[in-house]
Amino acid sequence: MKNLIKNLFTVLLVINTTTLFAQQPMQPRTPEERAQRQTMWMQKNLGLTQDQNKKVYDIMLYHAQQADADKNMAPGPEKKMDKKELKRDTDAELKEVLTGDQYRQYQQHVEEMKARRRERRQ
Image (cartoon, rainbow, N blue to C red; front, side):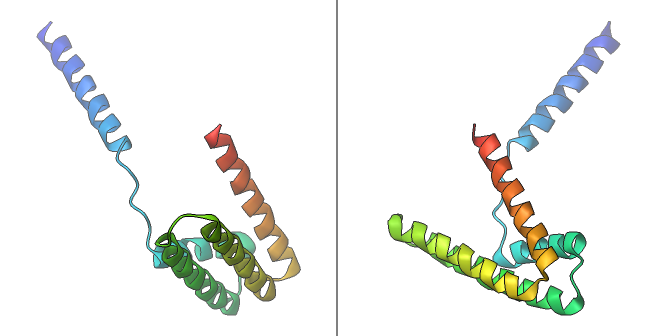
């Protein structure tokens, strides 16, 4: 009986601890971390060359830094427009660096990510 209670207590403790860690908020990533992560994904999935890899990282880093700076602006329609402009600029710069096939794969990935976010919101 004591072993049963001891085992039950251990299981409850593990479940409680796991739940506690699962509920901790994510720490926001730095612009460098975000750019590195995006570039790594593109290298793995799009087969970037060394030259493309460097250029993509530079583009992603610049735009991640801009996005962080824009977060500090007052909320409003101007901020929303800046976000859309930044996205358009990023896409335009990537289009110049990536091949047509790579760019289509990238766009497809972006659309899939949008769909996932919509599903999570609902």
